[in-house]
Length: 260
Ligand SMILES: C[S@@+](CC[C@H](N)C(=O)[O-])C[C@H]1O[C@@H](n2cnc3c(N)ncnc32)[C@H](O)[C@@H]1O
Image 1 (cartoon, protein in one colour):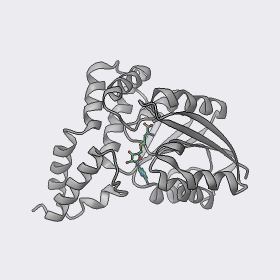
Image 2 (cartoon, protein in one colour):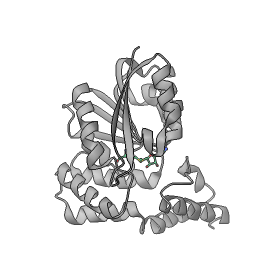
Image 3 (cartoon, protein in one colour):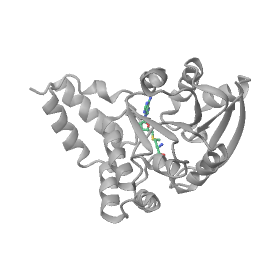
């Protein structure tokens, strides 16, 4: 039996996603708990069959070159020029790449995988043996991202951790053998930026010189995060003004280097 509660929550979830996440649900895994596993799978499959994320994946699978990360990125960008999406995109992407290349990290964390675009963009630059962990709370997005990453040939470089950042960050040392992080790409919901930054500090995951790079600090905006990293005395900050992906709206990335 599918519970009414479960179905309603699924529909609400779908509507949120179609509205671009304006009523964001933080922990999608909780929403379907009242359904039995088979019903849950059927509901997710039918909802995701029509999702923008699934259509993006289908477009890539039909048009891009398997094993060619640039081709996958190009076709995601092409699809998203027509239907706006949350990937970091081809205007901010080169800024992210420049910071990653300068940092030359050995251990990386991304908060917010979505369809895997930035994971593919970043991981292709990393030297052999570098770890790239990316956390995604939405199971459907994580499943799409895994297929996108596999198709791009980046599956050995990227590990998706499905769950919320608040749950997973405190377990990174014990469950994933992370000592400290060299580079963190912060790109989930902006209200999580400050609490998760403090959580990374409290969990001893930052060392002197760890680089945080936060997206969307102007649009939709992360004023409390900017205030925290700029005034806490714990970071050296650089702002990179740019534009929102697939749009003319102003946006910026903020780089914050931990002082230790
Ligand atoms: C802006 S998108 C990420 C875009 C991706 N970094 C890229 O550029 O390709 C944000 C993603 O973060 C996820 N998310 C939001 N809050 C989260 C949290 N607390 N923990 C993990 N993932 C979260 C959302 O489900 C969404 O898929």
